Length: 281
Image (cartoon, rainbow, N blue to C red; front, side, top):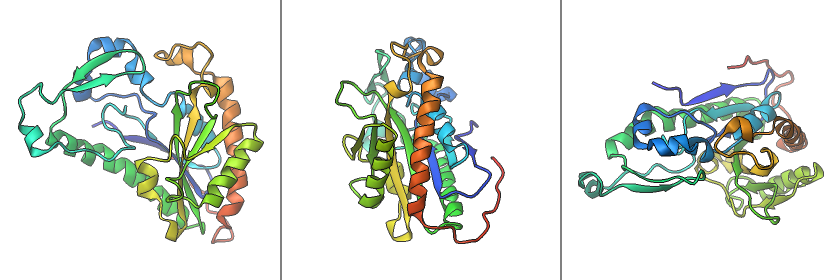
């Protein structure tokens, strides 16, 4: 059984939990058999991940936030999308009739056999739910010490064109975080020299919708970072060591961390006088 996620915590209590659902690159054996060798050789697993998100948000969370990072590729199961079970009719169709056409950011294309209902249910039970229960548990822990807590769902996106924002902040149009909080976060990011768009084209996916509870001051935002901010110009998308820019990642992580520091003041004071210390997981 492969671990679905990695967990790291700062030494002191924090109102922030970061999750990176699309940063994983590991394939289980069943998924590896579904993806043709030509796609694997083209680097499709990396190209279709949120390139650089794992490194960036781990650096942001180092001293400020708990970080839950997916280890498995989104090819195994997409942790930011509601799982879709095939209908009984689809489950009974002969092999080949349910094949799904895949188009990768690497340029590879292939037809992949659809998963059966039993396979989807197994992935939900062993990967999807354990991951989201871990996110929920960390939010519960944060809420025990702070009046308000924030989940940040961290992603990168393949920005194209000069009009693409450096950062897109989504809250499902205010359903997962108050507008004053998202606007304050946007202003903090802009003070770090970043261009920011709100809600479009990424209003937020499954994770923020599942874990936000505004009535309990449990807020959630999706953060989409333009990949040129973390990648070398002209880098090879399918080759991580040739693609990521460690200096740029470290600089951007400092900017995002500074924005979180400003946002922390809006999340109210701790409920206890002395923060308890917590070991890294």
